[in-house]
Amino acid sequence: MNPVLELRGVTRTHGTGETAVHALRDVSLAVAPGELVAVMGPSGSGKSTLLNLAGGLDRPTAGEVCVEGASLGGLSKRQLARLRRRSVGYVFQALNLLPSLTAMENIALPLELDGSGPRASRRAAAEALDEVGLDGLGGRFPDELSGGQQQRVAIARALVGERRLVLADEPTGALDSQTGEAVLRLLRTRVDAGAAGVLVTHEARHAAWADRVLFLRDGVLVDTAGPLARPEDLLESAQ
Ligand SMILES: Nc1ncnc2c1ncn2[C@@H]1O[C@H](COP(=O)(O)OP(=O)(O)O)[C@@H](O)[C@H]1O
Ligand SMILES: [Mg+2]
Image (tube, rainbow, N blue to C red; front, side, top):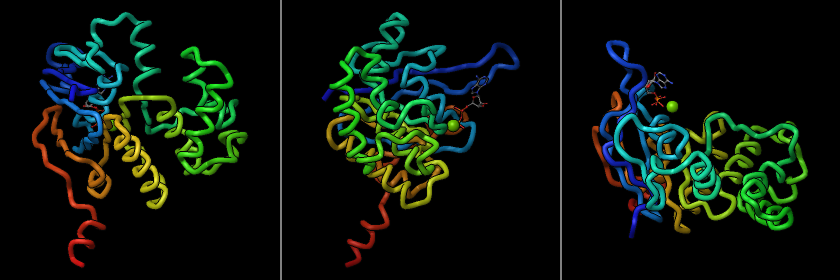
């Protein structure tokens, strides 16, 4: 199957000369539909840079990023914005919910911006809310929701519509472990339904939800591992 995301020899350098920072060096990677890839590595190793490039929020200094077969470098600003809204779901560390919009409106916004009618957008938003276990809370404003509920709204917003690529940068942030697991389960479900996913995490037990784990160090992809064992899998195999 054609990969949803492909990075070919991607380098991202900030600045020039002696003060240049090589955030990412010659990274190649392909993520297929139904595949969730975890990215691990120390702080400053280039994890967020990789996600920003994959989502078209940043442009590489060298190399090529392709999403659903389209080379991002060849797109106009407008085409890139459209591809981001349609195809890419991005879960940021900071939630970026708009405080003056309800949970439902926050989720429906990307669809409306992309030209869906208000009714179709609300219907899709209601489904996404249901998917994250927040049905009935769509009328609440972000400050009327707990931190965990806000995080789920952000996830619902990233998953709404038919996004083929889901990018999550330490999406479990400061969540309690139960809510964090619920968020990862959602991500996994979406990927199992045919999306491609990239999950940045520093916790092995979160990376265990992935099919493959990549390790970054100083902007270089140093290692790749298959699936890590999940605690529950270990328990099962012991039974
Ligand atoms: N806009 C920028 N200007 C200069 N250096 C940057 C910029 N963004 C990131 N960097 C540097 O690039 C490296 C990788 O950063 P980042 O991708 O945020 O790492 P991580 O997410 O793994 O912590 C770091 O050394 C960081 O300081
Ligand atoms: Mg980061």
